[in-house]
Image (cartoon, rainbow, N blue to C red):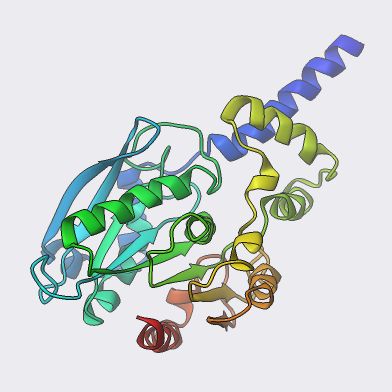
Length: 298
């Protein structure tokens, strides 16, 4: 009986660990079709854009699948080139960022989207909720400087896990002009406490146990994924965006990070917006706040 209990407990802990490091994301093509079906993106405009697909090698051996949509007035030969790098959310892929393309092109930015490790068409490696992903983003920023020159202006934008990645990246790279964090979590441990209670009705004491198992499997600890610690220390301007009725990542997390950041900051809370839905809920307000922020800091 005891052995049966131990085996069941271990399987439960293993499954909880898998929820983080092996997300069950939708297939790449299915996700793209869903974005098109939901009319989150203009299919004709996207397909008519001049695009470049390429790969960037990570520090960990796998390849990152990237797509660049070039702004016509922003060629590599132009002075002061502007590039916006987009980081998608957990279990998704770069197609989730396509909806922002037309807006940023109008602002004069070339748009670079890529798949995180273990997502989309990038190489397989354990998902780490931003811990290793920030080093992948570092390599993508390197690519921008190598191909656009030292005078280029790079900004980063992320949703959910991508937003946490963008914020964690600021702690290792001061080259980006500013960052936009849409529905980022402030701390992974606090996020897991919330989600265990919200979706699984499980006690929070499981988190340290699952965390140790995750460390043995993937090499990072939950406490090392804490964007709020980074934003309290960096000077890079950050715009925090969050839907007010986000149940997956509580809106309070962006409020906490906004308060923790000492200066060069802004926040936009979107009424009636759920998780990662602020742009499609209030496109006009979103674009106005983002444009004002970029005009101020880029």
